Image 1 (cartoon, rainbow, N blue to C red):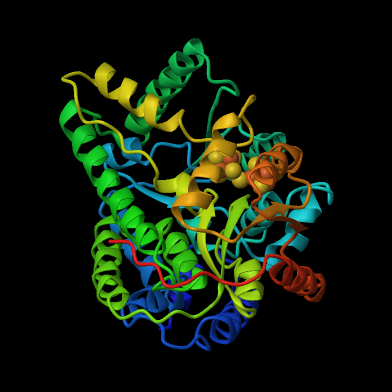
Image 2 (image 1 turned 180 degrees about the horizontal axis):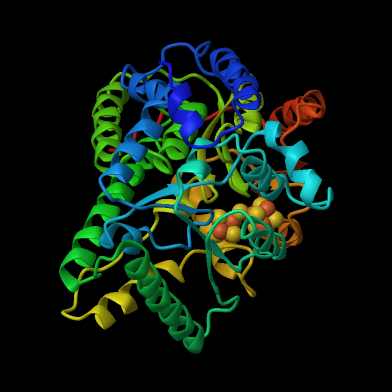
Amino acid sequence: MGDYRKLWENLNMDLEKHDLLCEALPEAFGSIYLTQENRPENMNYFNFALAEVHGARIQELNEAKEKGKKVVGTFCVFVPDEVILASGAIGVGLCSGSQFWIEDGEKVLPRNLCPLIKAFVGAKVSRTCPYFQSCDMIVGETTCDGKKKAYEIVEEYMPVHVMELPQMKREKNYEQWKDEIKLFINKMEELTGNKVTVENLKKAIDLCNRKRKALKRLYDLRKNTPSPISGLDALLVSQIAFLDDIERFIENTNKLCDELEERVKSLEPNGKKRIMVTGTPMAIPNWKLHSIVESLDAEIVVEETCTGTRYFEGEVSTEGDTIDDLLNNLADRYMNINCACFTPNEGRTEDIIRYAEEYNVDGVIYYNLSFCHTYAIEYKKVEKALKERNIPILNIETDYSEEDAGQIKTRVEAFLEMIGSGKELHTVS
Ligand code: BJ8
């Protein structure tokens, strides 16, 4: 990474503390990622994006800001990126996946809270996240209790707009969400001084759909046995998706997929167990579960998470001639995301069952961040549905620390032994 100290200083960052973070990340990335064998060549782009995650991309964002663009931070896949883009702003995902920020988060939040929330609040209060520091506004949402209350704390540091997400999926809830998107459009117009028109909103919808298509293409390739890409690498691509320039991300993800399509033609069986991960998101640099599972005789082939299928499944229609038509299209697509904050949420279990078949999985690991009640409670329903179909499931509740890594490894090992032999070669075109 180049020298960005001046830039970070201008962003009012705590440079000394940030140095500590910058020391830890390359080490973790090197030992987890760069030790993998036979990685696709086109992962080099994503390695570079990660290496420059606090450098070149931040410089790019700040150059855009100098030209008058606004940068907006988000924490949930319900916040429609289309609106941010249509207003001429840049969106960045701010969910944080590092233990580094937990201590600072705990200074202002209770300890018995989900690590994702403690980390993003810690990142803000410690002034060590250059994305947070580059944002003109953040957009929260009323999903889980922890998040919606945490935005009240973040509001003491910077402007916040909170979208009220309904927690049921009845007809009136679609209307409510549509109204919230309308309010969000007003807010973005006020922030940027730009009008959201039918034309620029359609263009933004199209761009986001292209991003979804690229990710879907990557995931479809993972349906092959064996997968032409490790779960770790696919996870990195998804994580970079939340931070990168959208056009460049689409181009590089498609290049990677071109290479993987070639790889599929000469796949050799590897006997590894095919695992689905379902549950809470894995924000960068949370590679803990994937690195444990893939250090064993297994490959992760799909994530039913918000850093996985929930992020890209379902496109937004561009049909219609008015903003109201497009608002309906946006509400329809977003209300189809099956987050555990909804009640009931049968759609998620149906998704998991469908993916188990489509991705030809041998077993499912239910990944739950500690103190995430909605996903923890939903476990029983998912377990019951999978057991009825003889699909093995393992429940892992963990945080960002490495303390329980050994214990998780032992449990995953026992799980893999229990689920028996790996699948034969099976290619999907
Ligand atoms: S749509 S999963 S991104 S809310 S922060 S709910 S882990 S206790 S992130 Fe989420 Fe939107 Fe739903 Fe997806 Fe639990 Fe932690 Fe809350 Fe979390």
